[in-house]
Length: 77
Picture (tube, one colour):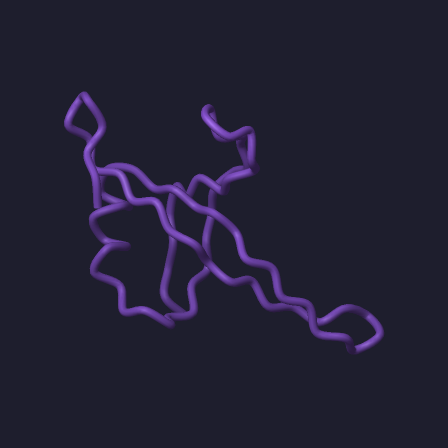
C-alpha cells in the first residue's frame, strides 16, 4: 500500500488471469493492476490466491507506457 501526494490510498499489484480458448487450450496472462481509495484498502487485506471478479478499465502507465488495469470494484468468488 502506498499513498498519493493527495493522501489517497493506492495499491499496485500483479494478477494472473486464467482462461481456456475454444479449442480447449489454457492461457495464462499476468497483468499489472492498480486500485485507489477504499478499493485499494479492501484489496490489501484480501488473501493471496483469492479468485476475484474485477470491474475496471485499461489505461497506460504514465511512466512506462505499459498497459494497466485500474480496478474500480471487485468481489471475491
